[in-house]
Image 1 (tube, rainbow, N blue to C red):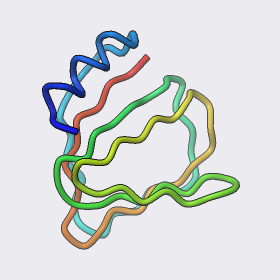
Image 2: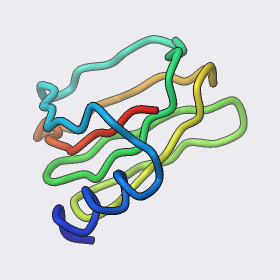
Image 3: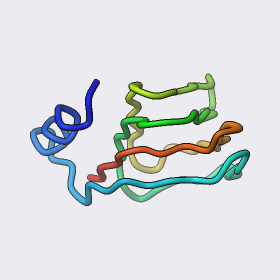
Length: 88
């Protein structure tokens, strides 16, 4: 999916705070939650999100959404990751 289409979908689905974020290579976040739902489009690099029952790995062009208050951890790939994110 391209960035323009994704941003439009975020708006149509009630997501705000649409920003581009970057995280350094090989960074990891231990298990945590957010008090907001999030939807992301990966622009470059890779991220793996570990949930209770599965691991989801996303690369450039992939999208991923997570509801508020869902425990998860994050592992960034060797090239870092750059993504568009919306919150609701």
